[in-house]
View: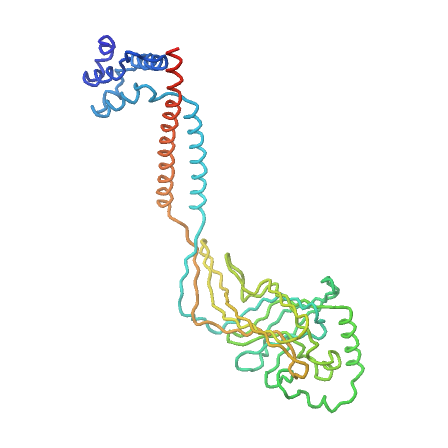
Length: 404
């Protein structure tokens, strides 16, 4: 033992060497496994470069800890369990690093509210709806604002697609002018009949007769209609609705033989009040309302919230989001009201600003150090526990072999 300590006394303190040699002394009744570990540790002691400048510059306390870690049996022993735990730890670290990197590169949104100060702008209404039981020839789109006045300069881009009973397109029609009427003059919405002069007529002209026969033929064949496009309306409360109000009372009565036979079943594929931004949810998209027996009027009460979406690139997207509530009013056989689908909208005085933001780089570094450091520490604990467990299981077998 004295020879061992003299071999490296020039580079380490005498007290540390004596303590280390005492630790490495061979027990009296050593097992073969202990003897192998002892010889391995002593070889490491003899091969240690005691004149290493980096080692000599260490403080006394750190030098002692380093020697114990370097020389103690099993401190740097290579095991299969240790390799497995290390590989698992590296894989977990790589996965967590990619997760943190993805989290850092992704953006999050911040919502702010303020009073809406926009004035004099128009409101775009994007519609895409299908009426499977209503031919395009009798379907009209009406729009009025809260004051009930005519909108002379209203710009409209609406298309109608004729559909067969299987939903296949069989014709197209473009509406250059939107049908606009005031509620006071809508005979289909009140108990009084409009177009009083039509009631005094007992006969219809040839054009009206041809239209009646054409629509009846379309109803027999199960034709429907799909309407889509953009309405540009004034930025005030109002409504737009899809109905048969464009027909005169006599023609509508001849075609449907009563208002309760008008089927306004519909599918709303898309309804929005401006362009879509990431994460928006329009509550009426993919809405399906099918009437099997009684007919009636659908009313959707919509509250529009002006919205601005600011991208991370500083681009601003003006749009609107909305909430909706629904009401259905059935119509009996004796009613003079005609079914329709109403969309009654009103604007909120509060505007919402949604802003994209990205997390700071220092936040990313802090989370990364915490995650990787914790994984490294946990891996070391698992390695030590696994080694001690295997050593505990192997000791009884070694003792039994020694005694035999």
